[in-house]
Length: 255
Image (cartoon, rainbow, N blue to C red; front, side, top):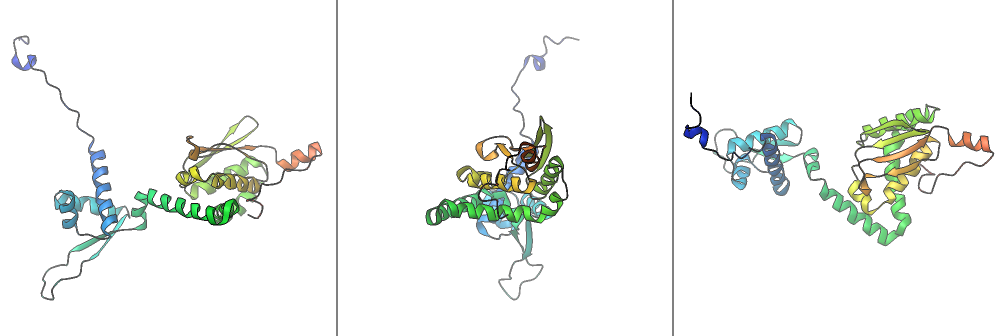
C-alpha cells in the first residue's frame, strides 16, 4: 500500500473548529429574550423575522424560555371576528427572564443612589444600605443567634446568605473563620457606593457578636467577598483583658 503518491494524503487543508452548539444556542436564546424585552410581547413569527431565523428555530428557544420560567404566553387578540383556528401565541418575559438583563437595574440603582447622596448626603446612603441589609439578614437572626460559638454562627450566617443568593461558605483559617461570599448581586452598585459593603460588614459584626474584618470584596475586583471572623467572641476577649468591647460602627447598631 502506497501513501506517498496518494493525492488525498498530500492534500492538506485548514479545518475551522466549529463553535460549540451550546454557545451558539445560548447567544441566540439571549437575542430572542432581548427582543421580547424590547418589544414587550411578540409572536414567534415576529421574532423570527426580526432576527432572520426560521420560525421553528425561534419556537424552540421560546419554548425553552417558557420551560425555564423566563417567559410565558397568552393568546394574541383576533383582528377579525371571522378568524378561524387557534389564535397566535404572544410570548412575554417573566421577572426571572428580565433578570438576564440585570445591568439595567444596576444602572437604575446607581442613579437612585446618586440622587439620594446629592439630596441627603452620606447618612442617607448609609441609612438606605442599613435598611437593605436588615431586610436581608433579619429573617435569619434567630437561626444565627441559637449558636454560642462564633464559628457556628458564621456557618449559620453563610447558610442564610446562600438562601439570599450570595453563595456563601466558611473555612477555618488560623485563629478564626473566613466567611466567603462567592456571588454579590449588587457588586456593580457597591463598586461606586462602598457604603453598602461597609454597612453589611457592621451588621455581620452585630449579628455574630464579635468584631469582624472585611478582607476582600467582589466590588473591588476580588474573586469573593471575604470576612474574617475571630473564633473567640469579642466580649470574652474584653473580659479576659479587662477592656471594653468594641462597639458596632454606625449603620449596624439598630439592626
